[in-house]
Image (cartoon, rainbow, N blue to C red; front, side):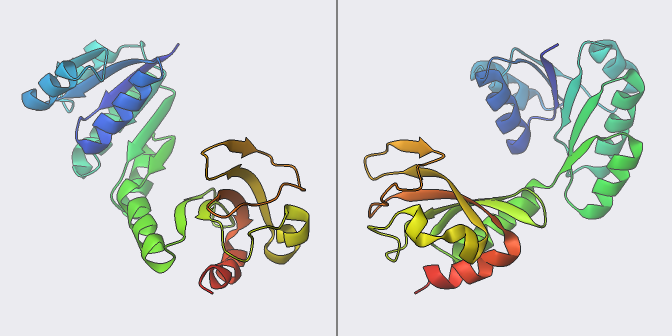
Length: 221
């Protein structure tokens, strides 16, 4: 089954629904704001959007039934509603319930009532903005866990004209370069260790978080 239920069409919900729909998934969105529902239909970011008070247990169960194995609850700013909706979806039998939360307390409650995954978009965005301010050369970063992360960064001048063997990043920073995009926008995944790094290239790396502080100092030179 590839049917996805998106509850809430705020900025976060619209982004989730649009991405799923663009990737060929069947998406049903539920939202009590009529204007947001009309926008979703008009801009064709879902297969179907329904105006519904999602806290109405009877109505929600009637629509969802057992048609969905994944639901994304995008109403994190309304803590009571997000908890109630998650509980109802769990009772219906939705296997994968992904919930947006605005804080850790809400997240823990959502997990207890049935959420399989809790995401904190505001917290994540805050980290990204702070990272951009502190380290302008880091264009993107993503934490897999407290130990490891993936980083996208502009080639430091110290790297230009050298290959990965010479740089020996694995030994120095416990870092693996998994991709290179050269100035002509040509991308290479799992680059050959002898690949010469050009000025203006963008590098994609996986590294231990605790080793990145050393690497940041290199970028700042």
